[in-house]
Image 1 (cartoon, rainbow, N blue to C red):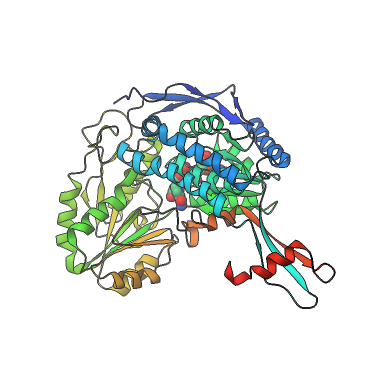
Image 2 (cartoon, rainbow, N blue to C red):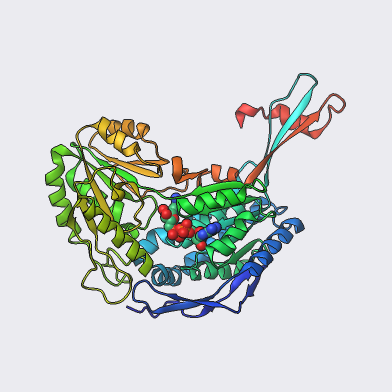
Amino acid sequence: MTDSRANTRHMPLYIGGERVDTAEHDEIRSPIDGQLVGTAARGGPNEMEYAIAAAKAAHELGDWRNMDPDGRSDILIAISERMNELQDELCALHVRENGVTIRAAIAFHVGYAISHLRYFADCARTYEFEKAGPMLEFPTLAAGLVRREPVGVCGAIVPWNFPLLLAIWKIGPALAAGNTIVVKADEKTPLILLRFAEIAHECGLPPGVLNIVTGAGEVVGAQLAAHPDVRKIAFTGSTAVGKQVQKAATDNLKKVTLELGGKGPNIVLEDADLKEAVDGTLFAFLVYSGQACESGTRLLLHNDIHDEFMEALITRAKTVRMGDPMDFDTDMGPVISAEQKARITRYIESGKAEGATLVLGGGTPEAVVGGHWVEPTIFTDVSNDMKIAREEIFGPVLSVIRIHSEDEAIAIANDTEYGLSAGVWTNDTDRGIEIARKIESGTVWVNDWHMVNHLYPFGGYKQSGQGRELGPHAMDEYTESKFIHADMTRDLDAHIFDVVVSTPWEDM
Ligand code: NAD
């Protein structure tokens, strides 16, 4: 299964516009077959300190934040276009490094990364960095301006499941808004981000604007989250670590965004199109072997169609092809690591022990050799208080819960500490939207799943996170708001007066 286009060279860190190597290196082995994909420098406290200092120096120098936003946009566009040219190489590296299928790499992991970076490049041009407010007449005549200014040095901590895309969700708005950034890559998947740094460098990004450090989360990740010179931290990962990041960020009152775990309720009502809902349910829980935070892992299935639906779902699930992820016919690849497989296996055992019925999978597929593989696995007779219904498994495991009414479905959907994603399958779109209104979740799909869109906010209710990524408000998360009040009684010729009078607030 070794792909000849995969990258097998050594990748140093990227700090202050330079490649920085370290004494210790990590071997990155593919979850597909255990073969070496490449080696990466392993960052430690010194490298993280150096990276934050480089980002601070670049911010203070001001070349990037004072650059015309169109100029910043041009550089970000150049990077996304270069990524597009290198798409084959980037996809092959991504497939080898984190085991995603080539189809998903092209569409989501790399494809979205390119188009979302392009979106944020456009935001640099369209975002209102300064706008005039209404004239103030009391207590004196005054003009008001609201500016959005970069916060300074930003930190980003990203997980292994979508290492490039989730970094772009932070790098894109941070750089479009004029900040500098230090990204902590995940230990398991640093290569794709270090390759991205080379591309950004080649496209003329000034030194220190983007810095990428690898290394242990509890060492360099914690350091980044706590550092007094970092003014904003954006984290994607588990809820447990997200809480630690938030605590570490309080000492200097950083701005914080957290994208955390999920346990997506997937409601299939009695009037749903059976075939569409079966395919949609598989898509919802099997994308990237169930290792997507917004997967649909709790199927809330209406009693009236339960047996017919389950028969069709199991039949269809048996056709899911597992094998070489570089093969376009492959539907599902491995899970990320031996530890992750062991964790998933423990959940499968707990499902059996708590009395759920294992109706599909639960083991290792026969067709694969080496690597870390888990079969598509389905439990029926699940109740919402079982561990497999309450905790995020992060593997290809579906827990099916029988429901008898819309109200019961909504109550069970909301009976969770998570609130990242949800879905409803029904032939009546209005009914689906009405149910969507009642679900406590950052995203709800009606007759679809995984359709994250860069124009719309993404994030979680409750313990699934804080703040939102994507959409124009992502730019707000990376800027400070400044109100400039200018007394106008002495200077009616001031330029600001024309601006304020000619463009009243409500027209903007
Ligand atoms: P994780 O929380 O273990 O690690 C995420 C990142 O945090 C890694 O880079 C890691 O090195 C770093 N880290 C670890 N300990 C740290 C600490 N003490 N301080 C600072 N950083 C630290 O998560 P994971 O296992 O890599 O990823 C899986 C989890 O991520 C799942 O729970 C999944 O739901 C979640 N996730 C959420 C989203 C989302 O957008 N909501 C997206 C992808 C993944």
